Image (cartoon, rainbow, N blue to C red; front, top):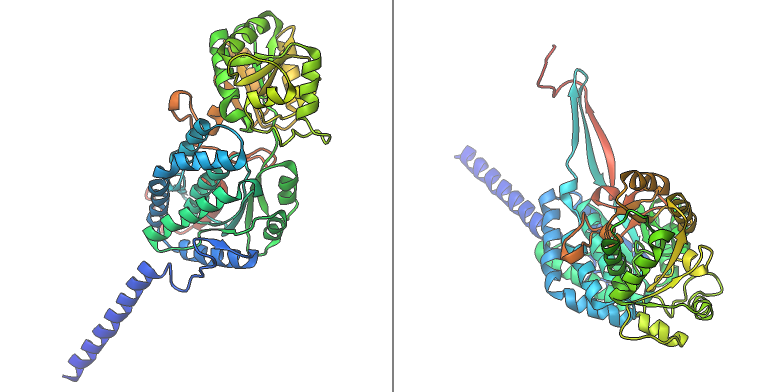
Length: 481
């Protein structure tokens, strides 16, 4: 009887322990997790990062199925809000077009790679087994631009959380309202699906100072920065592992063998997309003289305004480029008609692009304009086209494209340009995953790490590749005692 009582007591204790563990597994994600202002928003950097660290420590112990559940909750939750987000982004930032933002948001939400990229690598042989797995860094400090605020939150979050990390997101002050809304909604969807809070955190009042503080915080293990040269430089000099998406000035080369109708379609469609604020957008055309005029006429016929008066061209440059050489924020991402009206240049219809025939040294060619201005430069032959494209790209090694039916020209240009992205006979927005006619073109890529060399980022970018050795076994092909 005594033995039976002891056995019953042991069973009772074990049952309580197992029940407690199950409860902890199901609800432990929310146990004692800080709330801040709610849904991932905090008033200071320390509290935000502490909350993210706690959330990440819970996440890293969960199975991959848990991460997949989070990603699915993000996709299901944001689906009905895409048009709202596009309109609110356009209203707050004043940049781009709603139509393009809808396409970019769908791409970021549905076409960003997740947990599926984390399959381990295994080697076996006489020396036993060697396994490589992709594991999280911890808390990643991410900084987003005003040009793609919601898209960057979605794209970064899906990749970074799939990799097992939590994220502190430094919102751009120029898009702080829609960015905060997106972060709050993401936390709401994730918490409802899993009980886990604060996987993505941010501040109620974003600032440059808070981003600088975040970059130096000891509990931030890695940085991922999409923005201007200054903030990228800060990340690269922080002493932490950094993924930096820097500047670009993508040239589009067109040789004498190109399908001019297709080239005109691709160049017009891509350059006007979201009023040229994508870093991958064609910023200038470098064409062989023999086809330059025909190409220009075909693009103008599609809906571009051609500025021919040298005084008007100079005025456009003076008006849209600031004294420091950067594009004037007043005109970044604005409609072509807004820029033409401000310059006092007459036009007909509703042009989507502003074009001019200039030489390679014109500031409109050598400046990353981030507005619907697309200069064209003529060259005598393909070698001159390539040399000019390399020069005006400015050594950013970001993006370039070519329109050609000459395989050797395509191959040589891709090799010599040495850019993170190279597109042949297509629109360069394809490099972000957005495809023509609504189709996707590869995985979504909104953080393009050119200065640090990772190129278009994926889930793997935000992991540590760890090696595990087991010399004594796990080779099924042979056995020696």
